[in-house]
Amino acid sequence: MAVRKKFHQFIFPSPTPKAIIRMVLVALSAYLFFGHICMPLRIKGSSMEPTYSNGSINFCWRIRYIFSAPLQHDLVLVRFAGNRVMLLKRVVALEGETVEFRGGKLFVDGAKLDEPYVHYPCNWNLPPRRVKKGCVYVVGDNRNMSMENHNFGQASIKRIAGAPLW
Image (cartoon, rainbow, N blue to C red; front, side, top):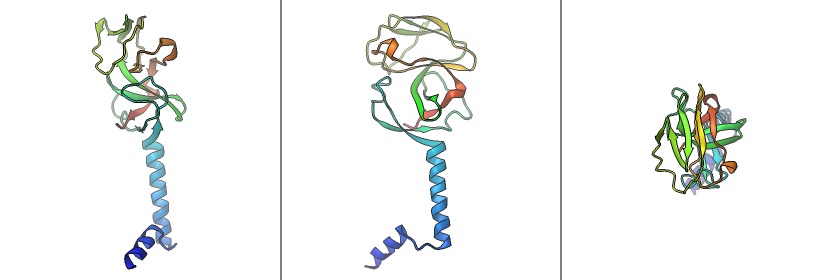
């Protein structure tokens, strides 16, 4: 019985000033960590399949790109509308590079990019375009979707919110 009482006391401490301060600090720490550093997110849509499936849960690691810029093949979360709506995409080209789709194949600066994460056939065609300064070119892994149903293109590095945790 003593163990049960100790457990109950641990979970529901008496409202002493010390316990109240501890609860406030735990709540504040959780708010800061999960609200600003490691934000939970639910993936909606199939643009990143098979890498990430529709309805799966992940976290946005916001501090990933504080001291470095994203690199080619990195997965990033791009702020679409505030911090509530983000797009999960893959960086395929960096600023100053030229991007082109020919017969479903991605070419960066004229060289075919090896993309082992793309598993579905693609028939996209897009004329060459240069990535602007301060931007990266992002696209989803599921290229089986038509181009009209897929959000992709240049994204400002300032709009990159972070990277998925796993």
